[in-house]
Image (cartoon, rainbow, N blue to C red; front, side, top):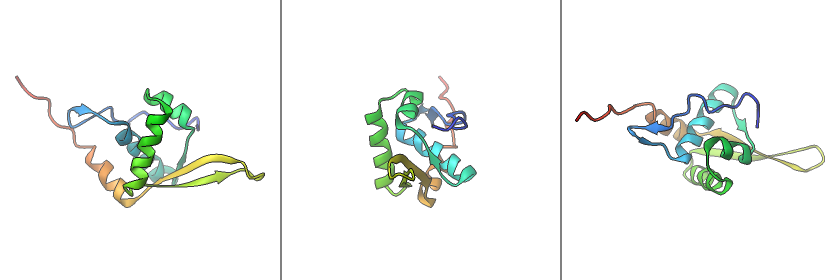
Length: 109
């Protein structure tokens, strides 16, 4: 994973509830796509940062890809070995992530 890739600013709570892994991953991909055009990361390192297992992260990425929120393409070394995937947010993904910015006020008792 790139040294510059950070979860800083990626929400852990959305509208007063715990943010799901797929929502946090989408927000990260949207941010990095806006700044750099796309993002590459090691699933093992990102899963560790998110506090989940690689399988959970795989399911989150698959859900986002199948929903049309992100696109991915494999990246290869010159010798043909796969380095991983490059992820980019779609317009649909950007629109969904924009809804995460609205925080619900805490309930008053």
